[in-house]
Length: 625
Image 1 (cartoon, rainbow, N blue to C red):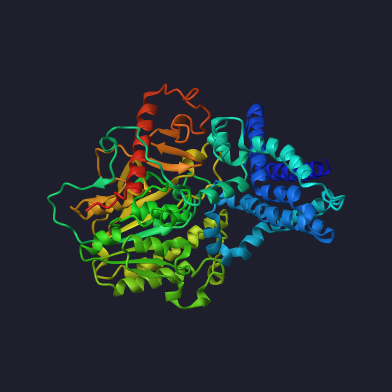
Image 2: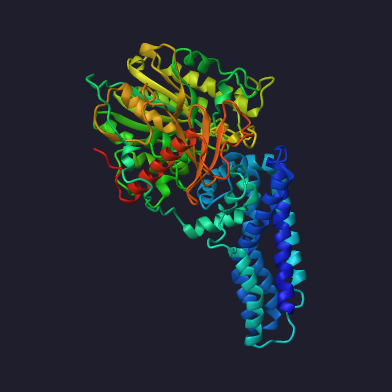
């Protein structure tokens, strides 16, 4: 009984520790959300259930050791080894939960194994994170110290009389079997991170779960393995990624330059919004551009946004496409398509080479030349966090493009509007603007940097024969209310500037990042078949929509509604009319029944895209020629 009492004390302590972290998570991100008392109890109930599961799986090795092997070791090392094993198993997972207390504001979900890929590229910015989140570092040290002391206290009497193996085996069964049943759950399906979605709104899933179980689950899964779906006999009659424009116009070899603006919200461009930033140059460009008024990202992270923009592939995986099991699938990316037409292709980013795996993506897409801070070659212009300051690197990119034979295709990924929004010392005073926060000041600085790029290219012979595309990798969304986040956190700017035919055109229908490359190819009068899950924004017959995979929910946004579908339960989750109900207070679905015709059509479109995506990935059918 002693080992059962000691193990139970350790487990309850860890359970209380996780509850404390959930309360802190609630205070940071959900305290201003009006959650009903009954719903809040349900969230914390499922939080406790997932904590039990996570802690059972995380500490199963310790409990097996403690009950079955501990007594055979020399007395002098028993307690030391037991405490050390508990610390090794639990402190790294505690650290991940603490990281998510800060990282959640950037990706709006609990971390998966993909966190370790992101951390590698974020290590240079650790000093900036310390300045803002120093208290989390301190709290982690304190909690780690208290946790180790607690382990020592609970296991203080581990050197008692040696028990027989059969006695220990019986004690292990009495402790582990009931706990294992609770960890797995009592229904036919085991508890996994998405289980609470059956009982609570998707908006609160991140509060109900913990980072331990999402990390462990994604590690066991390793990489997403898709399963074929058979919703429809002929899904390609509802959706296909095969695109081909019907045009008699000859191919127009215009240059293409795509600016991907880091963490750039639509709100920065809206004079009526509290996040509006002073962007005189971009304002002047937009007055002469094709502007998409209702544009959405397909993901919430840089690697997924870039995949959607350049590859036209929806980020349905937990991991980026180019890290997935299907990264070796054969595709003809935009670089390959345009090189076949005689284009030179390049990618520019002022961070280190292959930052966040972008060089891998460029290679998959057939983009030949990758320029990084290594090519720039002057670390005096390093911002101390992410890479070369944009007001240095963008003119450098302009110089390289000026040397590139036309026609060319290039993507320029900016960095300065990423946390911690570092401004160069020489321009700090100029861009510390009254009434603006640090993120808005960084946007104003980026606007200045973009002007420098255009000053360097506007007199070049290739300039007037170029399509300049402006978009964002994702929104910056911690200012958004929790429910409204279902659609607002995906809002980004998208506009096309053609200096040779500059005029303002407004596109009001919903568009998505995956529509960008098809729209560009449409402008070039490209006539060959190609692959994209998006469609041309210039197609006046297409209503337009934006799809995303968010908190284990497949979400579709059209001109008025946001619809959520749970692929695991094969049930609709929500339908909101955000035009009439901007706070998303009224879920138009009741008990999963499709009472609105709009929901039936949106569900059909989501399921058709899931079925087509899974089949195409599994069967390697995305190579379209």
